[in-house]
Amino acid sequence: MNEQLLNGELIFRVFLRTITLSKGAVIKGTITRLGEPEGDVFVEVYSNQIIEGSAMSTSYLINGVNYEITGLSSDTEYEIHVTHDSFTDCRISIRDCCQ
Image (cartoon, rainbow, N blue to C red):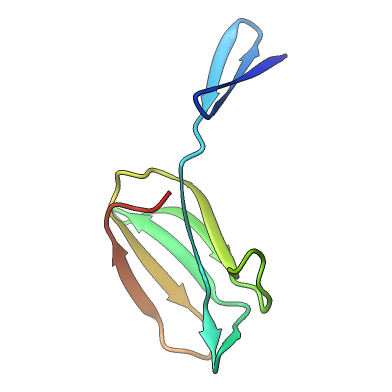
């Protein structure tokens, strides 16, 4: 197997085939309750009613966030579903997704 980095994309050459992995966009943030990070909140990202990614929030912060969903297309409109057993569900629309 041979690999190289080209324009921010990791390219693998395996058995005479080329596979290109794009970094993609990231949706990340902090879910808090009473000012503290809230864990066990399920965050799902949908595009055209198809799930594109999901994450479970943590009760602590890593680099300032407690959930992160990676590998998303940056030119897509997303709907974020946030659910927790003890709280009301929430839905948010995002256009022109992040970096």
